[in-house]
Figure 1: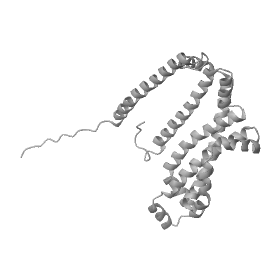
Figure 2: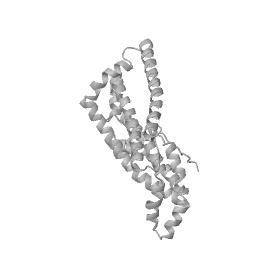
Figure 3: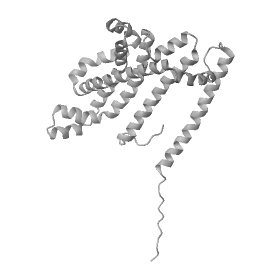
Figure 4: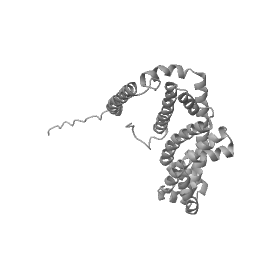
Length: 272
C-alpha cells in the first residue's frame, strides 16, 4: 500500500481580506478627493472674488469655528431637534408601516395619501407649519417629522408584506396573539427594511431641520450658515456645511457598526 499525502490549504484570514479591500478602496477615494480640492482651489482663485470660500481658507477657519461658542450652541440645538424628531418619527412611522403592511383595508385607505404627502416638498409646508406652530422650535420639529416619517412608513410597510408565510403559519400554530405576531414576528423580519428607512429618514430629517432654520431664522447650524454667508464670511459658513456632511457620514457609520455588532445575520462583511 502506498501512503497518499493530503495537503490541506488553510483559508486566508477574513481580516486580511477586509484590509485589502479597504486599502484598494481608499486610494481611489483619496485621489478623487485631492483632484476635487485642486479644481476647487484653482477655479476660485482664477474666477471668483477673494471672499469666496476655497479649501485653504476653509481649512484655516476650522479651528476658529469649532471653538466658537455660538457655533457649538447652534450645533447642539440642531442635533437635539433632529434626535427628538427622529425618535417620534421612528415610533409612529414603524407602527403605521406595520399596520399598513398587515392590513389590506388600512393600506388601501391610506396608501395614496402617504404617497401624495411624500411627494410634497418640505419647503411648501413650512409656511403652514409656521402659521400653526409659530416661528419656534415646534415648527422645526414638525418639519423634521414631515420630512422623515414617510420614508420609514413606506419601507416598514414593504417589509411587513415581505414576511415569509412560514413564519406566520408557525405563529398561528402556537396560537400567538395579533400583537405578538406583529411585534414578535413581523417587526424582526422587517428590520432590513426598517434600517433602509432609517437611513433615508436621517438624511431627510437633517435637511428638514436646516431648511426650517433658514426659513424661520431660529438658532441652529442652518441659521449659522445663512448668517455667515450673508455677511460674507463664506469660510465659516462652509465649515458648517462640512459639519452637516460629517453628520450624515457619521450616522451611516453608526448604523453599519450597529448592524455588524447586533445583527451579523443581516450583513456579512463590509465592502464599503
